[in-house]
Length: 419
Image (cartoon, rainbow, N blue to C red; front, side, top):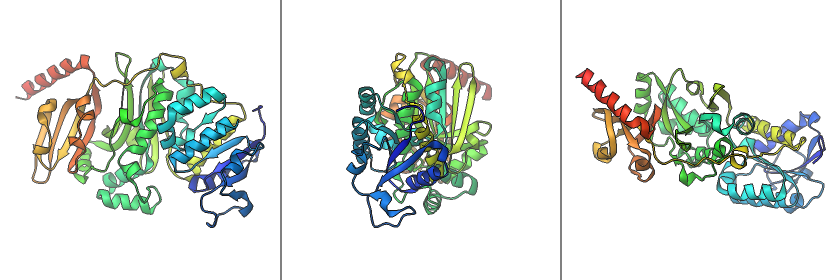
C-alpha cells in the first residue's frame, strides 16, 4: 500500500466499538479513509448509519478488490480468525480488536503475516487507548526490558475499585459493572481472568519474543476475592488489583502470570481506578515508565483501531523484533511466589507445600496466612482455585532460586529478633 494511499475499509461488527469507529472516522477527514461496507449479523437491528452501508454477506467485503483494509471488531473468535485469514490471503491489510482470537491463533497469524507480507495490527486488543504494543515493539530491546506490570482488564478493575473504596460485596459490584456496561451479561471471561490472560499471552510476544498460550500462564481472576481481603489490604496500606506481570529472571527466562495482587499505595498501579488500565514498564536505562488510559468503551477502543488504520498509510507492520531478531525468551517454571491466602478453613490449605509461612491468623469467619510457595505447586494444583479460598500475591512476590536461601535466613533472623 503506497504512502498516504486512500484507505477503503470493510468493517466487520457494528457494536459499541464498530459504531465508535464509524463516528470517529467521520470526524477525521485527514485520515483519507472511508468505510465502504459493514458486515453485521442481525440486519433488522436499528443502527445509527445509512441502511445501504450494511450487509450480512462476508464475501461482499472479503472479495471486493476496492476494499484494501479489513477491520474486524466482532466477539466470535473462530469467525474472527476465518475473516482475518481470508482477508490476508486476499491481499488486504487487517486491523483487529479480538484478543481471544489472537491469543488462540498467534502462531498461525505469525505464519500468515510472513507468507503474505501484509500488516496485521491489533493495538485495540490490549489496553484499548494505551499504545502498549507499539511501544513494546519499537522502544524496548529484549535484553534491556526488566519487567512489565499491568492492569489490562477494565471490568475487573472497576469491580475491585468498588469493593475496595465503597466496601461493596463482589456480587453487588459485579451487578453495578454490568448495569454500567463495563461487564458482559456473562462476565466469566473477565472476572475469571481469561481476558487478561489472553492479552498477556501476545503482549509477551512483543515484550520478550515469547510465543505462548494461556494454558502455559498461571492465572486467575477476582471471583474468589472477599470483602475481608480488601479490608486487610487497607489495613496494610495497600490496594488490591488484578495484575498481569512478567519479569526477566537472572537465567534469562521469564516469570509471567496474571493474579490478584496487593499493590503498595505509592506504586503507579495503585492509582488506576474503575475501568482504567495502566502499564508499568521497567527497563535498564529508562527505569520505570507508566502508561495510563481507559481500557474499555467504544471511543477509547475505536481510537486504538483508528491509530492502526492510520499507521497503514505508512506501510507500518509489526516486525516482532524480539521474536525474530533475538533468541526468544522462554517462560520459567522454576521460581517462588510470596502469597497471601484467606480461607474458610485451614483444612483447605496444604501448608506442607509451602517453603515457609510468615504470618497467620485464625478468626471466627476467615483464616489468613502469608507464605512462600514454588510456582509449580500452584501451576500443577487447583486447591487455591476452590470456592472459599482467596490467593493474592504480595507486592514483591517473585523470589528466584538464588535468593531463596537469603530470604529464608532473613526470615529466621527476623523471627529471632522478634522472640
